Image (cartoon, rainbow, N blue to C red; front, side):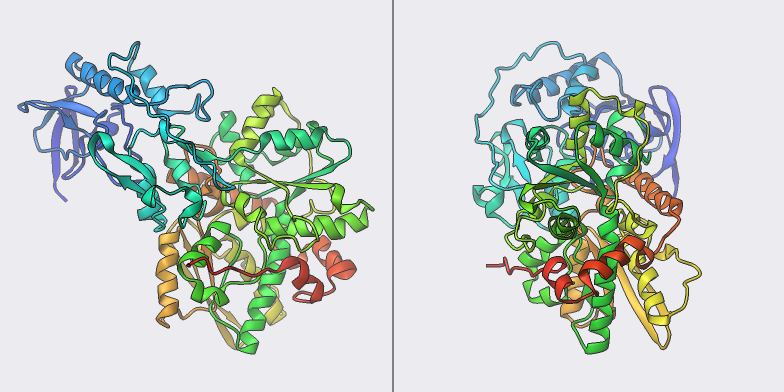
Length: 573
């Protein structure tokens, strides 16, 4: 590719032909403001905040979508440019619900930050803010259309990354609105509640349904025994909300905080991730040996489950019947744990802290009550936990690290890697290989399955059988694999599907921003957690084995099927 030389604010820059002005400016640390632009999305050129002056041109150019030309001279910080950007920003603000103090994104809002940077002191246009109803029709996601700045980020991630299309642009120009199809509520369309729209929204137009007050209330209720579980991806991301670098591991500090505010027990979802591997691995081997539906598809990700229920219900027999680790934990807490510690299950409240907005909807599925009670009572996202910490005034960085409680606090490295795309498959292979061959797996790292690539595959020799596996993340990639299954072209035994790009570390409830660069650092941390464990294979977890001895008896047995397995729903019609 040929190179071009351009001058930005009198600084010489040599870049590849086709590079945008914005990208070229970044090369020399010139910071052009943006709003509709997102580093992981296509260029839109909608908001025009990124305008610059180009010598010889009468009109401004949007730097995010204008390619450089050899010899181009660009000015990014003239009075004319600054005034034009302020004018654009004032126009946006005049049509925006500017109640910042009570907004969920107060202090972490791109519009708010940009207004400060552009030194906006007044809004010279008449304010025209529609008082549209807020959509709280579902268990996971809230839409406030009055906050929407019509940047189109949510539409792109829903259509082009997730392939769901639950929201779209309706009308044009000043009448443009971003809504679920046919002006319906989110609960009335095929939304999977993945929350990827939340992660890319620059303002507070879409966010998770908050359950913080419910948790404070149950902690105050002395008649309740309140336990909490922490998902693997939370511990490598929460710190970002408190100034820690992305990928910082703050597990012990989270446990310390949760104990400090009054939880009776603080447990680790990694424990039931280990349990999931035993059940799911046993199910895979049973299908292979007995002519069951193959390839088998993982079932840990509730957004993915809703996707296949909506769009490919004819393939539901391919999905593992295992509940997710979150739901297995709830079922066991209100049965095994309740019996073991002589606690009436009606007095137990199970709280989950998850990186995922879809987990809120999963918890209230009608079939998730095999314990006789709702398995999981309340789900908080990572962001909600961060808000609770801030509200408590407890300083996370000052807390001494504390270990999880027993029995559900004992886990392996295999359980930890569930938080990254490819992790479920790698954990399963560590166990399935040793169960099939009776031999110790010398190299337990399946590096071919790691990373945020959209599609990965591997083949593992197990005695006289070659087990072929694949990993996909992001629902648009799931569609590719599902179409392959329908057409008889998916020559695999086992396929891991994660709803969110990058897996749970990129979940819809994670700290914002959540760019690909940040996701890579979270994934690296997940594997560092794995390495830190003395035991790194799920079937060697001593407490899981004790659970089978004392209670479940055997994988895929009667008790396991009753408590740890589920069924799915055709939502297509």
